[in-house]
Amino acid sequence: MTDRVRIAHIGVTYPHGKGYIESLLLTPVVELVALYDSDPRSAKDHVPAELQDLEIYDGFARLLEKERPEAVLITQPNDTTSRFMALAAEAGVHVFAEKPCARTASELVPAVDAIQKAGVQFATGYTRHVSPAGIAIKDIVDKGLLGRLVSVEASWVTTSVQTRGPDHSMFSAERNGGASCTGSAATGSTTCAGRPPPR
Image 1 (cartoon, rainbow, N blue to C red):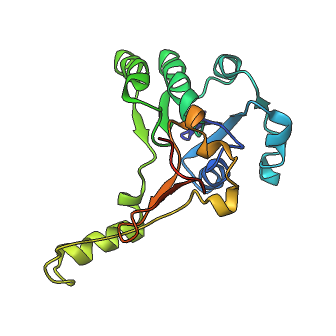
Image 2: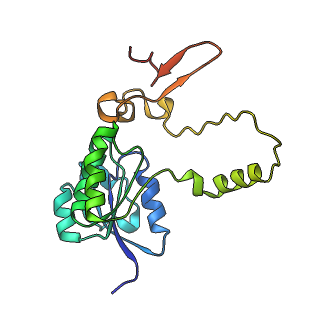
């Protein structure tokens, strides 16, 4: 018997997957018991050496039935995340899912309903407000060290067209409900994944 939470990671090859796996390995209260990816062969290349013997499932229901995790950490495209959330909740499994969890609010409703009905815990990947940097920034503002703030502009970009390429699934309107867009108030221009935005 272990005091550690048995957790499965869903979406090894999807962005943030590797970082979450590395974080789980550094968390002493967690036991990573299984992995899921729609392409287990490709996923093997993303798995750290110490987890190479861990099974990578391509069937989520089979993973839930065989491994019986207490929780799942989901990093999937937005068009599938809510389905994984609902299936996990229906199996009585707690859910942490990378943001935003769905392409639209209406797509998220069945997952929310399943989570509430099952009474499992849920959290999403808005983690910056509890990171050391986020806490330090809030402390600086709360102490008034910057004076009276009238405007703040910040940018934290982890989804880079230059890094991933414009054809990466992160920029697919069909898979993720939109594209990563940047704009300039000075020029009035906007680009989405390196292209003009859809009209």
